[in-house]
Length: 186
Length: 186
Image (cartoon, rainbow over all chains, first blue to last red; front, side, top):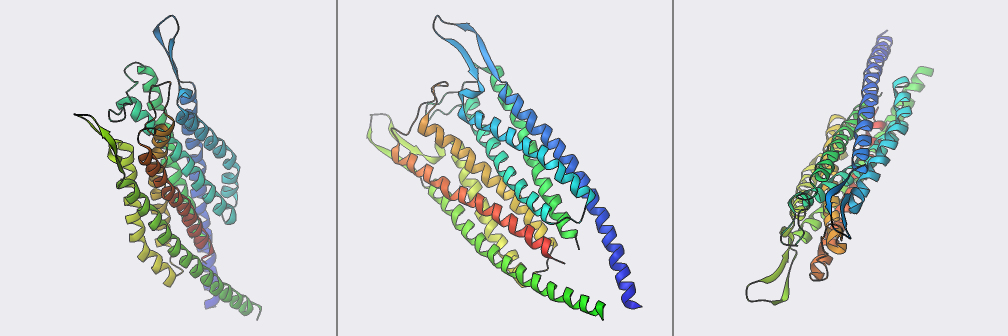
């Protein structure tokens, strides 16, 4: 009799944790969509940045594009790759909503999420370093600020970073959610 | 009888997974020490970098130090913080070796590890962007390479990045190990 009660208790706590995991999985799904919008927005905002100055000499037209700086190209690629990954991970997230006891797929997702977090952080912070240099320059190395000339270009590339850093924060949350979901499974 | 056998099987698989988790925890401990050496080495290598050129004018002595570039200061701080965190996390790792069924502390460790991964990646990749600029320069923005003059300075700051990127790889492994350990607990 006591054993039966224990089994029942086990079953009901199992059902409760399954319900919790379903909630976590739904939150996971929503966060992935938000992160997708953030990173795709960053990639597009950076990728379409260019500015042509209204004055020009006979030989040179002053024009700044994002692909003048290799780091910004890396930024666009990193954000595009991460947003593509986020779209591809949505079916797995839906699978977790339906089957909240899945384990191996959650571990695979944690690893992929962690790798994508590293990629996104690398792109965002490398670009931040270059954008800082474009704004402030560095007198010791004779790298001068270009933002006095290319004002709207600089504003655009600074703004593009926001979505990317938002994506980094969302990825940290996603990994936390996956870890909590894994620990609740019994 | 059948139920008894099932309980026994459950017990033995519990014991086996506990053994596995102990192995994972020991690996976790070793990886943390290696990552600590990597990041501390990077911080020291970068923090002690300077080069004074053998020629000078009446007014200027040509000298390059790591703190001429704010990004490299961030690199040193990030690496120092992460190596400090790794030392502080060792007691938790030892606790996991002794109590391989601990759950909440593993989740806390995953979150802290993920945050430190993001910090370390940010420092390493921002510095990589600046080091790349120091090597190659950028003709479109008139930022010239400084590595022709400060040759050993450039080699030193490039080399410092290695330990930091090694630390990033180790952190990804650490998060994987924690996720596997969490999923094995029953």
